[in-house]
Amino acid sequence: MMLSNMDFQTYISVLEVSGLLLIALISPGPDFAVIVRNSLVYSRKVGLMTALGIALGSLLHVSYTLFGLGLIIRESSLMFLMVKFLGAAYLFYIGYLGLRAKKTGLALGDMQQKQEMSSLSALGSGFLTNALNPKAMLFFISLFSVVIPSNMPLSGMFLCGLIIFLETLVWFSFVAFCLSGKRTREKFNAVSHWIERLMGGILISLGLKLIFTV
Image 1: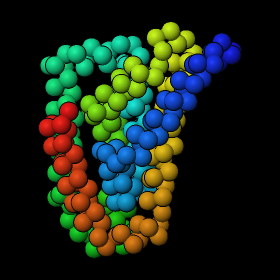
Image 2: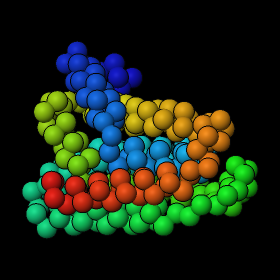
Image 3: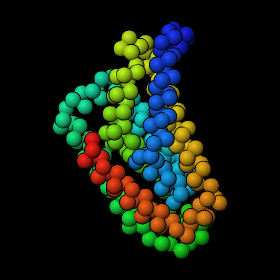
């Protein structure tokens, strides 16, 4: 019923949002680094829960942007700096944990049993990585300011939010599914600690980039 009330321009705007978001998702960033780490080092379940957390984080950005809070945060230098440094601090934290990873020498099944991350922790890692990323905030503010007309009906905004959530979830679930296969993880098992350290270094470098470029 709601969707039947939308005009042609609204559908065009929704398609533009979908296309631009896909380009942004494919570009490597903190979200991609976290999904790679969790999928390779832990399990498919952990990877998929991380993907859900990232999608929920994007939904948070969409929600406050539609309500105008994103623009308020962007215009308030203090609030923006708080988000910026909280995001960088979280990337430093999970990056530091990765750098401290040690070789286990265990078989794949034993490693899963010993190191498996809980579903809640995986969900939280994905959510916080995305939610505390000011670049994601700026992306959605810019996207909605340029693409979404000011007179778009509520149904159109709801559809945009739904598509952003689903597109983010599907993309990162696909990445997690591809990387967390048994054969793939068996190949990386012997060097899993190096993968964690590499991803840790990447996350720390992304945190530094976040501080100095945003």
